[in-house]
Length: 266
Image 1: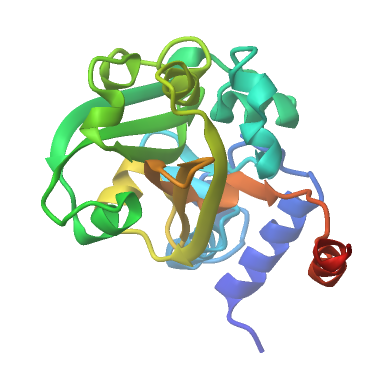
Image 2: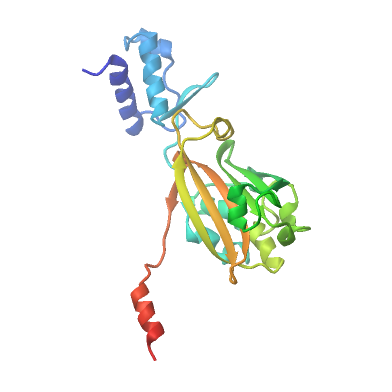
């Protein structure tokens, strides 16, 4: 037989999933459930902790236990980098995700810190420079309203971005079209990318920065951006709250055998 706290947690979880408690709704105070005969204070507290660990609620001093939003943002794949969005318009990547998700946005929901740093082994490998070389780091924290969704730090070789808007520390994207527009105008048109994703346990600093609930993993993104001749013009590391995004990719299925046959045809 399941312990009483588990039975209570399961019952509340079902009510949350059925919509009896909507996103943003506050669950009853612990003392109210105790008075209603749902168990002791420790029983209710343990049930609430289980719901928090399962990602259904968040708890904070002064706000109680609140149901988390269940509809994640779309994190687009190839489509978020469409040149028509940033070269011909002003739809930088995080805004493209919001538009695709039907969600509101403000440009100042992206803050940034720009600095010159020594390249770590990861960054050095990504940019193709010696470890310890000076590179520019453009660190952004992106929020939806007041809630952080992810961080993204782009690293650049100084000779590619010195004197451009990319190294301007003003909040928001780096001017119209963002960083890729700046690179384009500087003669570095992006052509292709490589992205690697993996999930992991967040650090204590990431838990605080992204306001993560107990037990929430993060998805780490490594993005390498190239020009047509293979020059790396950006290496980026993103840390995403796992439950706040749904990663969406649409692409043409390759047929390498057919392509080889075409290349070999007279």
